[in-house]
Image 1 (cartoon, rainbow, N blue to C red):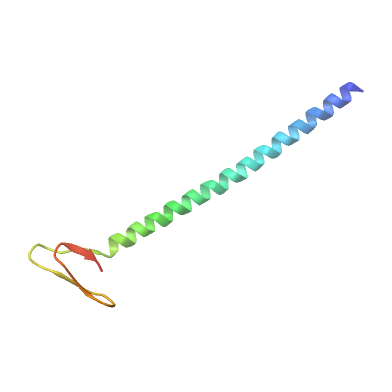
Image 2: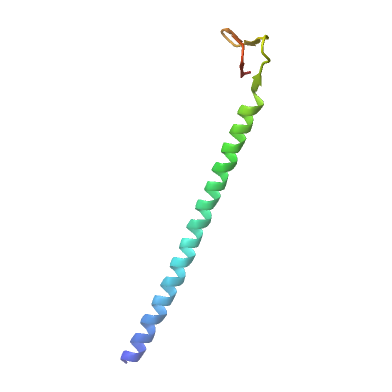
Amino acid sequence: MSLAILQRQQQLTFSLHKYNKEKVMHILIMVSIVVVLLFVFMMAALLMLKAFYFKVDQGTALIINGVSKIAVRFDGGFV
């Protein structure tokens, strides 16, 4: 009888380890997806900042017409 109980405990232990590995794998996949999405979002934000920044040559000015004010930049600025 004790041998049957021991075998049953080993089967339960194996099934719990398998479940934990699957659960950990799902969590790892979800975390990696979130990290990749954050990286893509940050790269897109940096590319947008680069696209809207204009550098001006020395001796010229950049006039930026905003909603409520007009800004004059001599070195560069976001448009």
